[in-house]
Length: 250
Image 1 (tube, rainbow, N blue to C red):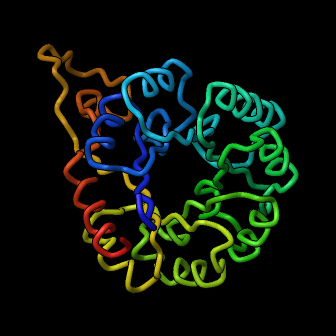
Image 2: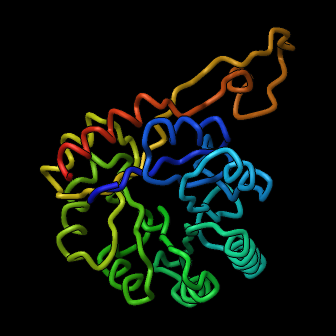
Image 3: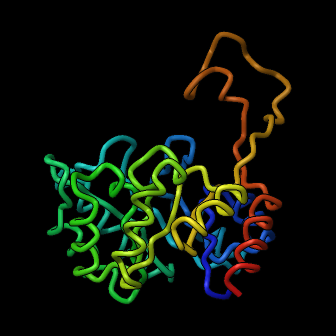
């Protein structure tokens, strides 16, 4: 793959196939990307394994919302790590905060121990933590491989200042994986500014549902109109980003 990473976040087999067609380095597998992603099912993971040859990191997030988890939720994450490790996942993506915004390093250490030799990444709980530079040093000391981050801003371009600082101060000790709003155009601007060579994108497009009968006045999801929209990865967007990364880093 060269000296770059293009990770695509997906929540279905179709998007995983598109990511593979586009040349993605690996996927982050989750469910319900429309709410930021939560833990996927084991059958979905097995389908991804059946139909693609991609490396898979599994997002483990027990619910929508903040990252301050109770003991039941922590046990759930830990059990999911064990389950996906036994299934052969290449990595997991986790995160947990204390009420004061600091990393819950006790639980993060527990997750790392359970993961064993699997790759392990800190997800975007990092983007809402109190002190990102301290947090980076903490996860480095815990042996984590990656920090997924937008630089604590809504998009990676808006967070480019912190991304640059993280890349410089990490000194190759951990992968800084830039996320949020990532596209070819943003990658073209971020590389010279930050020096980052690892990017996380959905490459998403919105498709219309094949449903022809649509019961009016009833919404079962985020909104009535959203019930009939499908969000999928566009292989051409992934391919464009990969081609540029190849030109720069190979």
